[in-house]
Length: 199
Figure (cartoon, rainbow, N blue to C red):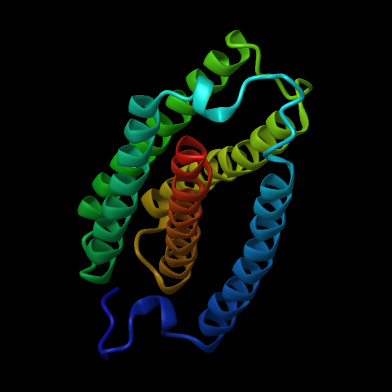
């Protein structure tokens, strides 16, 4: 059902507006969560306890591939949202599936990255640094995994019900969540990986 006004469909009802506002508040809590994890990492990053440092074990190419996959998925998610606002369900589904595939590729690379670290002697128990490092990246990875499951469930609803005020609101909220995870990753790339190499 196409909106007859300039108001996007996801904002077409008062309930939708309240739900989207509520999700923005939820994202505020998520910012606090990740800020806490970053703070813990910065405090503990020097506590290697004779274990490996990040600069000794991290593989730049793998991290750059992960970054490419996740940032590209944010772009395709934006294209899916654009298709939704043009009431093009097929285009919306195509770009959403591409987003999920890119997200799954990111998770595959991150799991391989973790396996590499373990083989290099960096486990959750090795030092305070590795504990904080794995906690921060693991929390982000868990969020991405949850997002993949969540958006997959939305695809099923979209196939069954089409683009409605309810499904558009749910999809818009999921897109906010996905973009938020990309922003968190940029902070991880900048303040964990790149900073770790330069230290």
